[in-house]
Amino acid sequence: MSDSASPLPPALLGVATSANGRRWQARLDADGERLAAALAQTEALPDALARILAGRGVGMADAGRYLEPRLRDWLPDPDMLRDMPLAADRLRAAIARREQVAVFGDYDVDGACSAALLAGFLTRHGARPRIHIPDRLSEGYGPNGEAIRMLAAEGATLLVTVDCGTTSFEPLAEAKRLGLDVIVLDHHQAGEALPDVLALVNPNRQDDLSGLGALCAAGIVFVTLVALARALRKAGQAVNGALLDELDLVALATVADVVPLVGLNRAFVHQGLKVMARRGRLGLRALMDVAGLAEPPAPYHLGFLLGPRINAGGRIGDAALGSRLLLCEDEAESTRIAAELDRLNRERRAVEQAMLAAAEGEALAQAGLDDQGASALVVGAEDWHPGVVGLVAARLKERYRRPAFALAFAADGTGVGSARSITGVDIGRVVRGAVEAGLLVKGGGHAMAAGITVERARLPEFSAYLERELVGPVALARARQALAIDALLSAGGATPEFFKALERAAPFGQGNPEPVFALAGHRLENLATVGENHMRFRLVAPDGAALGGIAFRVLGTPLGEALVAGRGEPRHAAVTLSRNRRGTSERIEARLIDLATPTQ
Image 1: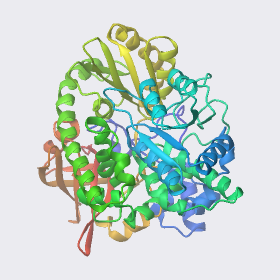
Image 2: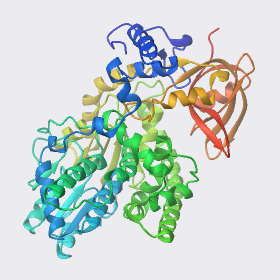
Image 3: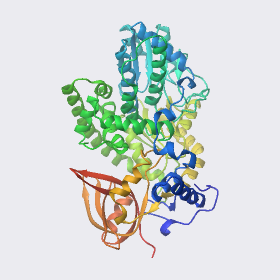
Image 4: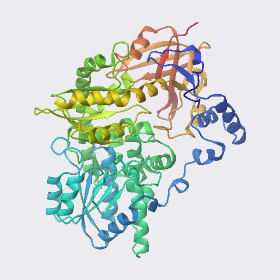
């Protein structure tokens, strides 16, 4: 909460450089400490919970809405979104006329959930939706002329793009020439020029004043369905099914697309997790079963167990598997699709590991041995799988703490790739600028992620452009990347009761980070490698209390090496907490974020 221009506060526990090369500091400054004390007293909150709220900028007036994020407190009038009345009325007409509606979605989790949300609602109300998810390899991202001509030939009269379409000028012009009305429901960043369509609902278009730019596409679709349900009622038509029952899909997409868990998004996830816990949607139930998820789902499960399996279809298999699973009403078919997605996800992991191993050398050379190299990493190869480059970019971004691009080049020299960014660096804006400068064939995205197509011959110019645009923002963002610690904790204090108090501030995710605790001077014991590259351990406090923990994907990393070097020695550990349920018992575990050697 401190001013970035102010002198650096003291390093917490004296940790100026950790195993991950980060400075540790208390999340709360003096003003934050006073706010936490006031929240604890006025709202009768446990001290740790009050500190968490204060550390996330929750003031006295907002504490109640934050701790109980109800949809009715956050859901706006849908007509605040530009073009929403046009979109809702055209969809109402499609239902009244029982039209064939082509739903064109992206091949990721957000696209699959968005397509399933819209198609499910249209089906329940008598329209005839036909979902088309493009093949990543043969069609690429977004609408394309060939697919649109096929959908028109099949009888579609209305084309609705979800999680794509904002920058698809020529394909959507082709749709209009073919006589299709077009509605775009999207959240990706937009330039001043927009496609010529009937309605383009996107809170990130420059003339939209709704303030809903943090929503993912599924959130936009849900708000559109609220508007559509209202339009149906005004026309005297019945609304079938409860919209609140669709929030499981909105929650899954919101977490998987890594949009900020604040405001309406937080309410979506809070309520959607309750819906998902009822296990009423056959497809999600089958997916939870194949992923071994028996406990009530949390954002972690959505982001790391369910989301990757749905994504696996679009990355290396049939891109339409995800949306088919989410709409499936046959138990045997749901089980079959979930098993196929699980198999594809295992295959995806193997491909990702091979690509990441190949990328490491190039990334290290660009980052520099002293970590003072390029502001953004750009790696690529001809034999890489285009469906996995985004994951490689994400891993490199985590490892080197700067934006990363990973590209798969075809034999003709055209590279298709993905970018992932760090907090504080808007990669979507930079990519859009590169398209406008003619450095990229095409590209688009949002603050934290983007997709691009680039000719190999233009790569040096593109890399130089990135350095010019990002050197300042990346340096500032990295300087701000001190590890913020919410509170000090001892192993004996990590009890189920303590964890239950923390859960009142959930759901946690992007924009509402999980609380991070520092365990000072705990001895590292029982270190063991588990799975492919994870490590388990125990943290033993000076008083003998112990807390079990795990560090994910650390083998061969600086953090993994620090764990091995610290075996049997006291260390400062920065952790988040999770609940591990086994039968009727439960215990609290630590997930290691960082490690440091005590200075005294």
